[in-house]
Image 1 (cartoon, one colour):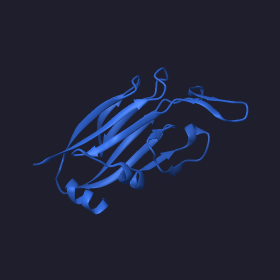
Image 2 (cartoon, helix red, strand yellow):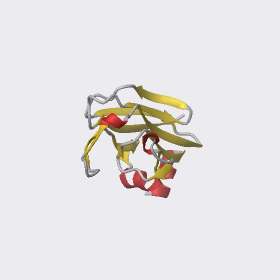
Image 3 (spheres, helix red, strand yellow):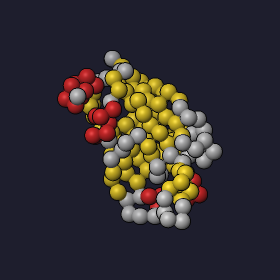
Length: 145
């Protein structure tokens, strides 16, 4: 069976805030960190490159109201966020494909109704960034480049 490599770089904007990150592939947790206390870390995982549908999910947890500093006028002065970048399959960085196809589902940390939004690299609220794709990965990449 051939293997595809999934890789990404993860980090936090506030190293003190105890933001947690889980990375899931389908029903398997690939990564679980209860405190992202680093600016950048490269991660890499194996994926069977067989005929199948998959879902890659990045789940942020543990953000509280205290992690966001807001001015009297409502302007965000400082915010604790997770950064997810350089998402790649077999070394091919997805960039625009990820922006176009990933969804970011969150409820503004419980302050509003849940929404499904676009993802541009920062997870600012507890929630899930999700990308559905198929393998063999090269067929999916050819269809989406």
